[in-house]
Each structure stands twice: as structure tokens, then as C-alpha cells.
Image (tube, rainbow, N blue to C red):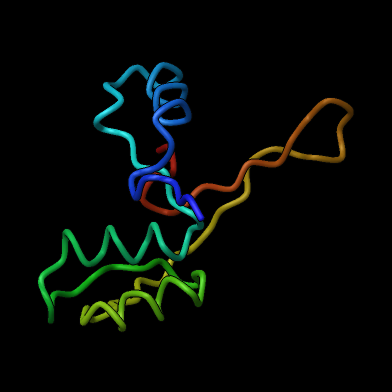
Length: 102
């Protein structure tokens, strides 16, 4: 059985790199988001370090952080609604409190 390179197929990495304007060596293809989060958290966060998550968050991310030896630090977010989605062609946009316009 032949397996793909750990960093992903070169052709796929090249395509993504050209789409986002970076070198192919800066692109890593992951078999799924759990694997990508795990690799990232293990590479960047020393064991015992806090990692901030907005609440609510994806439960899998918390599990990955804990398995990497990191300490999840929840941050409660308040949301504000702008716009009226009942008007034709309009959309409702939600923004967090810290990005709310004055």
C-alpha cells in the first residue's frame, strides 16, 4: 500500500499555496480538523500553557487542547445584532462586543 506524504500531496499543496499566495512549503494538508488542531496546538503551545477559547466553542477543540497538555481558558462573548434580515436583500450581521462600532 502506498501512502501520501505526511505534509500532503505536493500537487494539492501547490494549488492551495497559489490560491492564498504563499510558498508550497508553508502549506500543510491535514486529514481533518481534529488532526490539524492537534498538530498546531502541540507545535505551538508548551504543555501547561493557557489557550483562549470563546464560549461557546467546538467541544473537539477543548478535547484537543487538553490532550496536548494545554489549559483551556474560556472567554464569554456578548453578541450584538445589526441590520434587519426581514427586509428584502438585507442580512443580519452579528459582531462580538470588542469589534462593535462606536
